[in-house]
Image (cartoon, rainbow, N blue to C red; front, side):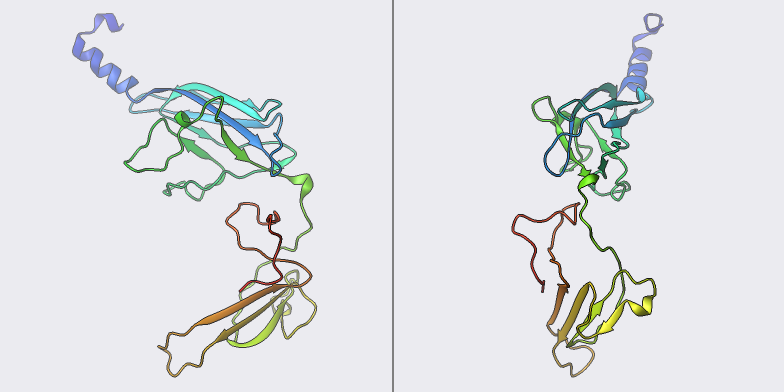
Length: 234
C-alpha cells in the first residue's frame, strides 16, 4: 500500500500513524520490606499510543524467582495497572511529577523521555537488566498488631493532657481528659495571647500508651525504623 503513495502521503502516514511510537523495553523487580524477591507476582500492563497510532494493547507478565520481570512492546507510554500476589499488599509510589494521576496508587505510567523540560516522569529507558525499576511490596504475613483509628479534636492549649481511645466506635468515648487507659496522649501549650491576632509559639506532644512513635515519609507506616521508636514526639 505504501509503495503506491507519493512521498508526501508516505511522510504524512508515517508521521500520523507511526510518529511518537517507540520500542518499549522495561525491566522491573518486586521485593518485599525485607528485600526478599516476590516470586510469581502478576504484573498487568498496557501500552499507550502516540498521535494517531495506537499502542500494542494490554497483557500481563509474571515475576521470576528473583522477583524480576520484563516488558517488551511498542508505544508512546507504558502503564502498569497493578502488581498482584496473594502474599503481598501493594500500592504504587506516588508519582513525583504530580498532575491528574498523582494520587492514583493503583497504577504508574512510564515514558521513553521526559515530556517537559525538567520533568520527573519515570522512564522505561532508565531501566535495564542490570538496573531494574524496583517496586517494594509489603509481605502481609508479617503484619504487626497495630491500632488504627482517626479522630478530630479541639485541644485547650494550656498543657493539659487528653487520652484518646482510637478503637471506640462512639465519637464521644474516644477522648478523655487526663491520664487514663487508652492508646494516645496529647497535650498542647501556647503562650498567653493579648489579642486574637497575636502570633505565638505552639508545642504539641504526642505520646503513645505502651507503644512508640516515629515521623516518616515511608509508605509502610508500621515498619519499625532502624533507630527504634521514640516514647513521645514534640
